[in-house]
Length: 104
View (tube, one colour):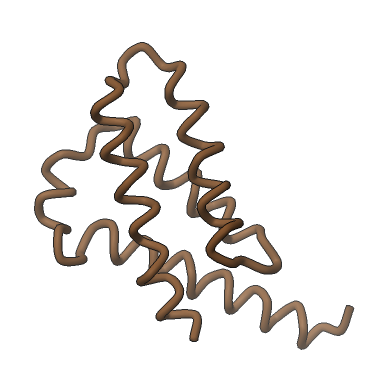
């Protein structure tokens, strides 16, 4: 793989991570999200962002599967309520529209 292809891929990944992070904390519901986020929520979002960054290609279906996979792991944690997890998962999935806009 050419070096320029790797750099472009890394740039796209970083743009997606930045878009997702910005949306989660500063989007239209950002203030409310910052108030509600607990430690596990930040870890979950961070895990999703790290996995996005390591992906060469990302599309909507891949992103949604990734969020579901991470959410399944957090469903097993006792300190996470089902309602909180459901809310966090919906927020993460809804972030795709912002991520997609930034990628285009």
